[in-house]
Image 1 (cartoon, helix red, strand yellow):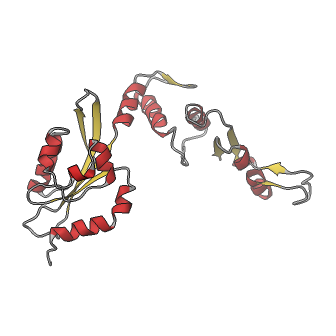
Image 2 (cartoon, helix red, strand yellow):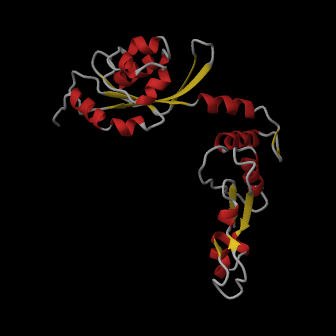
Image 3 (tube, one colour):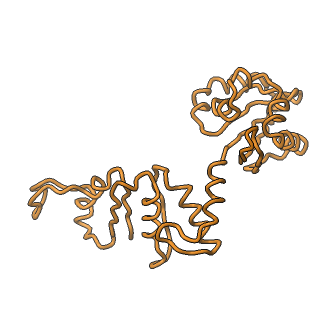
Length: 245
């Protein structure tokens, strides 16, 4: 296989810089044979609270020694064994004495010339999630949910980590296990708590009325539509729509 000079990978990284800068994870790419940082994205700048021009070109050992020294060991182990690392957790205290939790992944670019290292380092700061999880694990209840078992505490931690994401959440479980209670707890502790929580029992809706119930209708749209009616999506706007089966 033809080996590619390391600068070619750096060039490709720079060509996709807009994409990499949009990522929430910090990417240090690519360490050369001198363990120098050849390229990095914007998140790394925020991660180390340093401008990129002070990171790119710097010796990785010097940068990590004063911030997260365990990173040096992870990189050296990756190079020595040739085995990539996936989501290895490192906890360290910063200069202010605040605990930082970081998920570390490494990837080796095997096509790079053997005189270069060709290694990519990805850092994901999970300090806030870890902090919240430790707090939640001390709870005996979460909103209207009561329980002190390890499984319940893990559920509380999961709700706490999900509650402020503007995304769809799938809640599964047997009938009577409290799926709606979990949905309400997510809503009641989220930034949407002052907006409507709208549960919809989809299995109880006639097939010919599902569209009308979810999206609403205007007067005269069909037989029996005597007035305009907002749909459940519109009613729940800014809040939470809980579709249950």
